[in-house]
Image 1 (cartoon, helix red, strand yellow):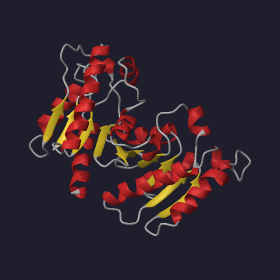
Image 2: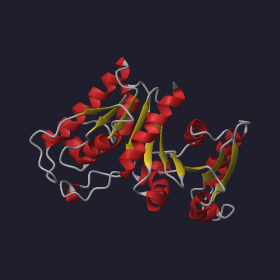
Image 3: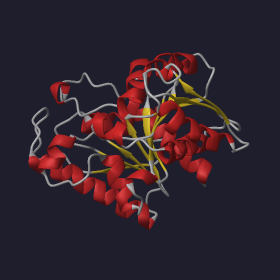
Image 4: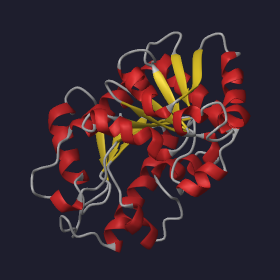
Length: 286
């Protein structure tokens, strides 16, 4: 059973969930969590954000009791959740805390038809993400990406690790993080015989090479370094997976899209892909 949270009731989540249930409910058992009571499409409110938060809490209870085996989250507004007292920067961090993990204990991964990306950091300002970049975070995200790729049937994943600076630092001319932070992580990852690890690779070319089939996945060092190419290539089919949890948690790669909510313009492809992937990962785990 896959739980399906509606997300912010004023966004496109409820209409996408309804379409997913109609198209996929006969082949994958789905349980819808949340309500859009008194919500107007395109008009977010604190009350609606509270409804979205309650659905998240309900999904945790059902995951812990075993009533559902995975959860797929509809899109939420981080701005409006914060106004409703939600103390987490995103749903990834919420599930980490609820299942006893630190922020550094889980990894946000994006899985699309042409690109799979793991992020060494998630919802941080660019300044904080770069200042806090650690070898251990790169190793953790690389191992989580490898586990995800192996769960998808790739026995010996080929993983590229991004450099931080332009052109991979150009031998230290543009920065030394490649040698002081990134290279030690790559050496630790290469000690795993089940992996093939390349890097530090210049971030301006490595995603093109991965999309062409040279690598099975890429470790990006901060949020936008990885999400821009992932969403550019496969926006309607990419899935966000939280690795490091004891449960399966996925979500579509897009936001609430308040501007088109209720107008019949939202495309369900990413949410459908998230449900398929959640079901696949649960069956692998079981």
